[in-house]
Amino acid sequence: MKLPLRGIIPPMVTPLLENMELDTKGLKKLIEHLLRGGVHGIFLLGTNGEGPSLGYGLRKQLITEACDIVGDRVPVLVAITDTSLESTLEMAEYSKNAGADALVLAPPFYFPITQQEMIDYLRFLAPKLPLPFLLYNIPSCTKLHLSLDTIKIARDLGAIGIKDSSGDMGSLYMLIEAFRDCPDFSIIAGAELFLSDVILNGGHGAVAGGANIFPRLFVELYEATNSKDLVRTAELRRSLLQMHSALYDLGDTPTKSITAIKCALSIMGICSSYMVEPLHEFDIQTRNRVEVFLQDFAYGTSYKTNFG
Image (cartoon, rainbow, N blue to C red):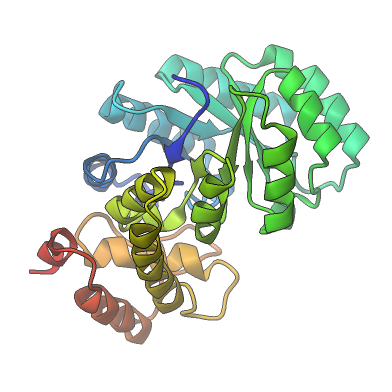
């Protein structure tokens, strides 16, 4: 795995069957769909992957099968964050043995912790991790917004970068400046709408949920921004905004974007839209709205082909 980690790394959804078993056929279709789209890596068991809601057996099956399908075509990253230190280490070791390339680590959730407690946790855990790790800042789920000092200590302990899902553009700019002289440390946006700004200001990429649906759109936006083609960047960003407003505003739950992504993939014939409790699929009326959008979405013939 080359450092710094760059590009579009989709937080892959977890394809499931109605009985909540892994949809292995859908998994292969989804991974090949992402790789055909030119993505630069795949991130398993994150928020979009419903990772914390899955049993450990299913998580391990997903890691094994995904690593087998991907092979050495792109890096595979696995989220290992857990409330239990023992389980975190178990999943880290399992990921290494299955062939993953890196781990993704957020603060343990449930108990609120301080910055100092997170630093102590990292000092204890990092030397025991069998793979490189990417730090994950997602305060909406962990109750802790990682400070710059904490992130710097994490880097000293071996972190290869940070995925920032704070939703705070100012924090991302601060991180880019703080680590500008650290060529092997990646600043990755967790909010896909920040992709262009992050790249133009010296960041490295995005973990973009919408890339599950339209990987080529995000890859082309990354490439256009990276090459400073501002006209093409603006054009592609308009397409991204169109997708974002049409799909992510459906429903009234905090997790509606995940539901929309799975719904779209189901309509495209890639994998099912089943979700793990307590999350649920869209109703038929909302699903129909997603289908109309996908049929009308004016971004290239490769996507239109999926709908006949």
